[in-house]
Length: 101
Length: 179
Image (cartoon, rainbow over the protein chains, first blue to last red):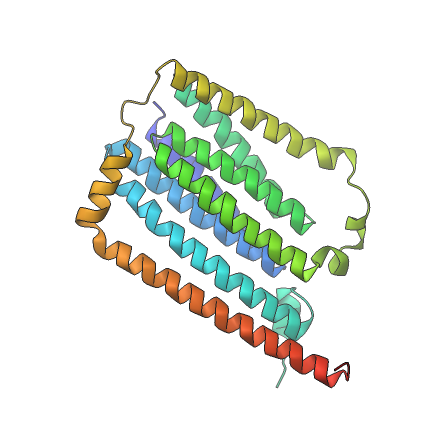
């Protein structure tokens, strides 16, 4: 049996890597991927908690994270296509400095 | 240290390495493929923590749907051609070696998992699909309704943004005088 702390530590490391990705990367697609990593790490923590207590509720919360992640990535990628068409780039810093009005 | 713990630690190492590679990848397609390896690693971790059903769902929904959606958009936007001219060159040796090694390690890990399942090793707290379904539809049925609403909103939002993108594209095409 895996110690509970180790599972939670791994989930924390993955979440921190995702947060670093959101802060560091400039490309919109990479930011979306980092957000996916963070959601995934949260799901792993829920499943680990479910394993610790032997109850199915943690896994059910992972089932609720899944549609949130799917809807988020669908809207995010549609936004990415729109950004690419409107500004000609996916570089978030460049887009933030461009004011079109 | 049981067999399931071995599976967990190997999968954790692979997942963390692959996630790090996602952050530092220069090519979007490489990053998506590393993300795929990371998701498989997390799925194996979930399996070793007693969640066989959620591990399958992780592979089907994350690796099967979300990653493929990323690949579609990358192909559609043709990012490789626009932002990274270097990507047109064939990949170098280390670029190929790292993902191959990570995937081989994961495959060996899966082999251990299959061996453990055949030998009848279980964590003792494996949650069955029946238990999940019972709890989901008896206690959390409101959550199921909310999840369906979230998916509906996602569908409408993606459709709206997609049609906005289409109109923008048409307007630009008209201004260019190509039509």
